[in-house]
Image (cartoon, rainbow, N blue to C red):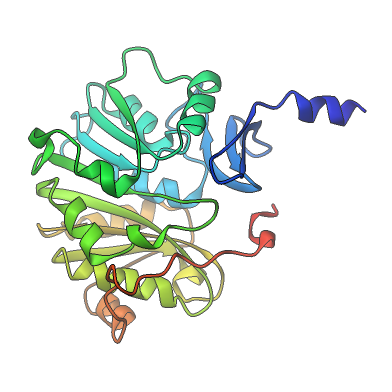
Length: 287
């Protein structure tokens, strides 16, 4: 009975696709998790927004730390809101940043806003709508002005097919400043067929690409997240040892010939033939 009362007190909301979103206390490292039908979407520590609990998010944070001068405000666009872990991190580490966030589900944003409020005075604008469609409605002044564009969109545990294509990444890249960086969260498992295709697709849009992942994930031996970082400008080689040192460990940064070999033979994903990311088994989220 006590457990039933505890479950009933957890903030929850039914999303448009029928899935259930909940804000639950995190059993790992404190803070809170946004959970959608058993899939952990985000971890937030309101007392310490620099605490990036999920490994792939910490890898994104390591790249963001290399942008511009330390502490310098950024202009950022985030496709996929979750609980706004990365926007909160940027606000904490780079006060004065201007950030646009796109989220498909108004009910999800409502439950996050009510239970995990943003820092007072943060310049974070949340827009409701499909990530790809909303890109076309962003202010024209953002075109060519973003230091960072993050694509981390999931419907349940999968990225929708229309957000994996060369047409989508071409549209997202329009917003990058000449040396701006695109970050893409890719989830894949054995063989990494989807991840290889995503790397080839991003390489078709932006000249300079690296991938950050846990070693066994990058070898295709376990389901996990890979972070693609891409830019028109060369990604400074001095990033690599710093990114490796930043972890989480064991860390791997693939670039150059190694990444070309990784993507060799993979077809660029287009609107005509794209597929959603693979759905992980439920055991992936058992911790």
